[in-house]
Length: 203
Image 1: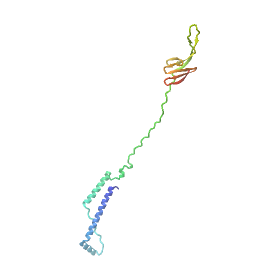
Image 2: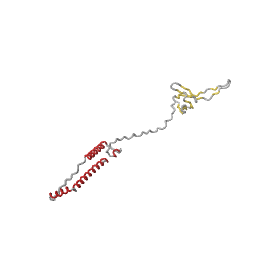
Image 3: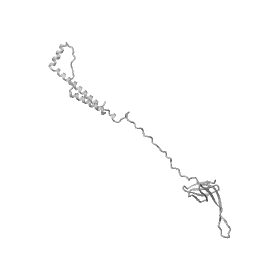
Image 4: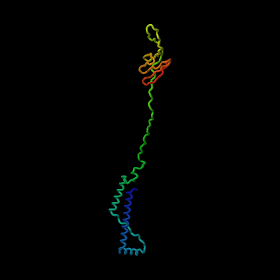
């Protein structure tokens, strides 16, 4: 029960006590008058000592008092209808079963760290090593002297989709592959853009 209703009940109770005490005072004053005492004694004598209920009625409520009570009750009903008379707890934003509940936020997506990208690697050697031979060229000599043979020079034969090369150690193919060493069945090359070495086997 809110404060406004308690205040209204207190006002009504106070007015009731005031009116009751006022009627008691008027009866007491009328009993002190001589005519009232004579009527009381004659009533006792005529009744043969029997007790009669006294005709004790409260004085009618003043018009301004009735109007005040009516207006106060009307104001209280208006406050109750507009929500002003509701308990403070209901207006304080407390927990309510009718309040909308927001859904929880979506879980945070954790992206796994894949680490640094892999290092680039050289592509496979695009040509086929199909043969090798020793180039034994004669060194030039002066007239009348015997010919001197130079050490044999190993050469490799490479076959590509559109061209064929005869190379030796130190030659560069298409500006990307350098021949480092030619052996009996293997040949070592370097991929120049990445400085990576590869070994090719003769077919």
